[in-house]
Image (cartoon, rainbow, N blue to C red):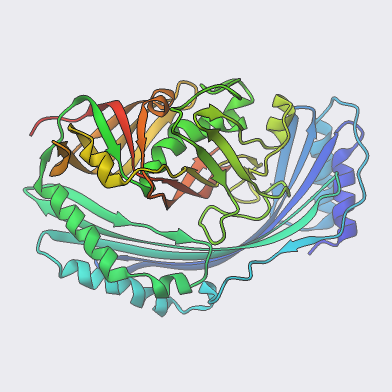
Length: 461
């Protein structure tokens, strides 16, 4: 591995005479995973990956190169070639490398990477056995478990010198119900930055039963009606709408180039006065958390919206230069092969003070989106559409018959303004977010909320 002196020499070579910033990013990653289909093992993997990335900047010009070859002479050559591309600027001298700051989590009880594949398989087979014997309508099951450890080091020309160890584990269980040729899926996919103790403590049979029941209900029900109506969106993964339709539009990736519907909105109302939202990377053990970002800045608990007012953007180094704002500790990347950019971590709408039952009771007619699925969004306009995986009609203040095939269609800015009830049952849910710097683990979250009017795409049964 490279010495501190060698890293300093690489940074000096990357600065050259024109660059004003240079950075070295080193990553060492270990991973292990198992996948099952109908309770038969279909995949088993263990691997390691190590690499280095070098970034050079001059103003808003940025060049990024990477390699998994740690030959010092080759890296010096690569740094000089990157520097030669940045052909404008006044340059900057390298600051003295500070003493290494190292963060290692102290709450990991059981290292998941030290477990045998048999332990993974036995756990997943509990879910598979239960689901396959639950009901004849369950025609397929799938389950997977993956664990990983990522050690990153960031050193840059401003003297930053940090190292962090990140441990993550996630598993999923799916149950597919079939009726009259129609298939519906129930799924759970929790993730955490804890150790294998998370798996040992998880109520797998209880949660698998919920998957099966949901799949069977959705396969047996009629279709959702279409049209504008009030929609109550359940807690947890319901927050995917805020993440996709609003969170991405608050990232410097889009704001910094004025390609966001929330450009120049700091201090202005962008949501209902009852809505506050945060991006908090410092929640211990949560799937999307980290102590240092991938530019070496300390992570933050960032208030994005306060009582409907836009208070902050998610800003990385490049966004900082474009926007004239300080970085907010939110720069992330999938691995060393990607340059970092502004990304979300654990992003959620904060708790309100209403009982979710009262929100339902105050809705005469509408849709209850108990469980959201995937969708798409245009960050420039905020327009989105998202599938409802599990939906129910609300009639006279009560949750009634299940419905399938519903899609929520709208604009993020309009949805935020139309939130008229916020519950007190905040919940987080794990996911993976894709953007310019690859796929990174993120949490979405919210309490139960009601949108007073939103377009529901569906069809009458």
